[in-house]
Amino acid sequence: MTTATPSSRPTTPDRRAAVRLLPGLALAGAAIAAGLLAHRWWDPLPALPFCVALGVALANLTGVRRMLVPGLDLAAGWLLRAGVILLGFDLVFPDVLHLGAKALAVVVAVVALTYVGTLWAARRLGVPENLGLLVAVGFSICGVSAIAAANGIVEADEDEVTFAVALVTLCGTLAIVVLPSLRDPLGLSREAYGAWVGAGVHDVAQVVATSSTAGGLALSTAVVVKLTRVMLLAPLIGVLAVQRSRSRDTLRRTPLIPGFVVLFVAAIGLASVDVFSKATTHRIDDVRTVLLGMALFALGTRVRVARLVRIGARPLVLGLTSWALIAAIAYAGVRIAWT
Image 1 (cartoon, rainbow, N blue to C red):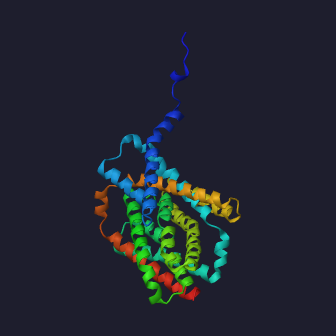
Image 2 (image 1 turned 180 degrees about the horizontal axis):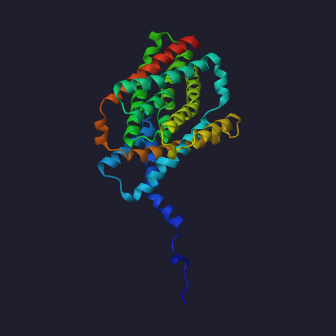
Image 3 (image 1 turned 90 degrees about the horizontal axis):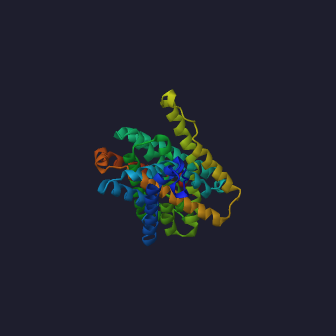
């Protein structure tokens, strides 16, 4: 009778599944590492859109090998939701209360009017419904992170996700250049300018870059206003989930409020009661960036440029329209609450 040595034991199904995930996850990890290095080398280059670009380049220049698919699928699904949940640890409820009722009402109005206005513009332009929704959420809340969260509900094509990410990146970059030059002509104080940037610019990093040109007061005001907008991600995703659940077949019903949104709100609650030290919060923020970078790289590998070209120029017009809309609404709100 022969006995099996440890090296000859059959591989368990769980181990085989884990091994299949490794190549794709390793490649996604390498992509976000490259994105972070590129951002460190040239600060205006954001790491997350860089990861999307790497994924698109891989898919369209060399193709995606079959061995990479399981890990990339995991990154585009579970890691994406985990990254959105960790975003909640950047937010605290007391910062929102510090703004005051009038300013808080302005922030809510900016988000709501931009969201509704962008959806209306998307319909008028004939932009596909899912792409219009992603652009509306991305421009009204917090750019790439909001698009990632909304796609957990919308389940748009990867091409549409990539187009939406490209639009918020383009318009956010334009804001860094354009908005500082408008501060003096518009007669905005440092605090009012910071509020305008926080209410009207999409990504947190873009908000920091745009507001810091006017000094510390503008920067601190912009960050608080911006993070207040980010807090509205949970209710907006909840509304979107309710709308989607009503339109789907009853056999495919999903919970009205997705689990990752509940955990996102729970993360805000934990951050608000100082459960974690600042050092721990910074580490969580780093992990969030890595998870979202891996997820967005994975989504990028599903994109085919030929399909993007077929979408046409209308989404670009939609993005520029939404950017102008939120800037105008935010400016009107700042005139009401900060001057």
